[in-house]
Image (cartoon, rainbow, N blue to C red; front, side, top):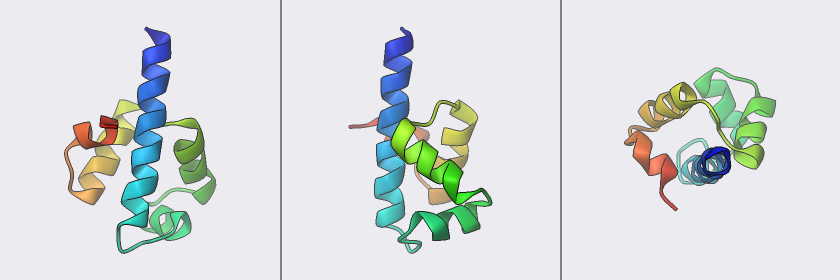
Length: 73
């Protein structure tokens, strides 16, 4: 069970990277500023996954997508 959660977190991180790249922000730095968090945090989410469901929901709302989009491979 724990392994599946980790895998979904990594998928969400990869999808965040894609969303940033395809958005008007283009870089993790620009997204971090607009989202209101540190660029190191964004890097951690992209590289090590997003483990917090609230964070995933906030990111989805920020980009105007369904939270499940962040879990699709």
